[in-house]
Length: 163
Image (cartoon, rainbow, N blue to C red; front, side):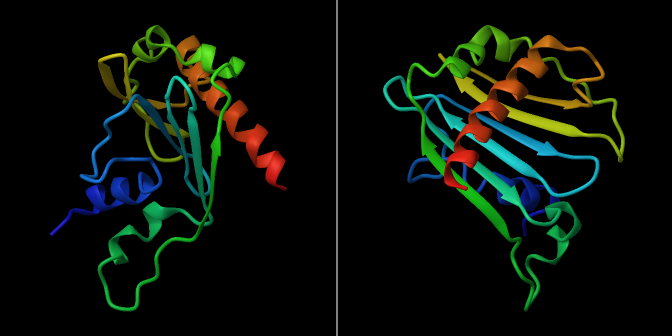
C-alpha cells in the first residue's frame, strides 16, 4: 500500500514528463508550490536544448486535504487546470535556470504549517538535487527567488496566451 505522502507527491508530479518506465530521464526542473492558503501549483520544465517543454498544473483545491481519501471507493480525484507549451530554446528566462543557480538553492526545512512551501526536484548536466524551502522571499535567498521567478515568468506568459 502506498503511503499518503507518496500518494501526495505522485499526484502532484503526475504531469511532469517521464519516459515509458515512469522515470525522469532528461534534464528537467519540477517546482511544487504549496501556498500558505489555497491549492498547490506544479511547474515543470523539460530542458531540451532544441525545444524545452513547460508544463503547469494548477489544482482547484488543496490536494493535501484530500490525499488520504484517494484509495477509497467513490473518492474523487483532484480537479486541476493543466497547460503544456513548447518554449523557445533561446527564451531569456532559461538563462536564469542554470546548474549553478539550481545547486545554490539551499534547504530550508525549518518551516511550519501556515507558510508558503516550495519543493524542487531537478536534473541538469549530470547533476541532480531535491531541495525544499519555506518562505523563500523572506529569506532573501537569491537562488530560490531566481528559480521561482523564472518559472513564474514562463508560466504566466503561456497562461496569458491561452486565455
